Image (cartoon, rainbow, N blue to C red; front, side, top):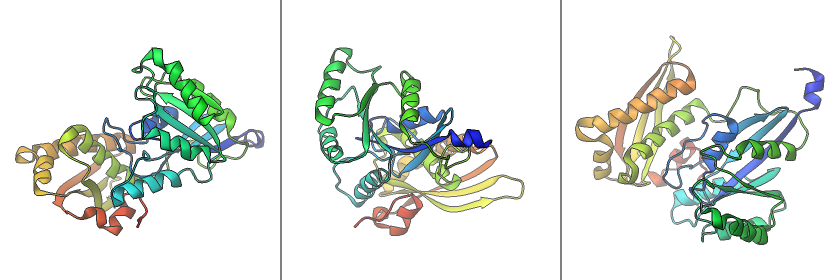
Length: 303
């Protein structure tokens, strides 16, 4: 890279926040241009803070995909919300994503009240406009403007891509001048080990839907680089009860085999090499109180 190119570079940290299921991860993936965060129709899919790295001409956008912010009841909830607010630290810009279909719900209102007190520049992104009531969009936009007075507001659909290109250009114009923090071909700060656990967890959500509650986690027992360039990954799927273990296993272990098959195929695409994935299901009723597991899934222990 030439000195002239370096001098024209811009780089900034953008915290993407919102209530659960607002579409934050889908948006980060759309801005990056490839999948870096897992997504599912289930709310609170994102647990830990993840950095997606997008490029717009000479600008590098560091997009902090955060867990949804909601009222906490359990230790895991508190850790997720702490990760979300922690992801806003040192941000050049905070982007509040609101589900345009559901609008200003009881989960969004407290978020707005908190963001009012923040000094960072703030924008609002009304997402899912493709499925929202078109007649109420302008009314929603006016209410949000009155409540938060963001510097700018965007109406987009992260899932269809409508409005994403214009949003990306605007974000690039808002971040400060400065050198890039990551190589041009890097799209995330997640390690392959973390990525593998997330892909398996996504398959749990996608294949089991409402059958399996949130009382599940992925623990990586072993991550081994082999001489032939492939990788062997041993993971435990932790659940709270024997009945949940039976759901994950399926008849004759068929469901677990399908989860593993789809997760392995996606990981081989993401990593560009052969993956040997070994899954086991273990009942651990108190896994949410396991301090070491929190580190494994990318969360801090919160009292």
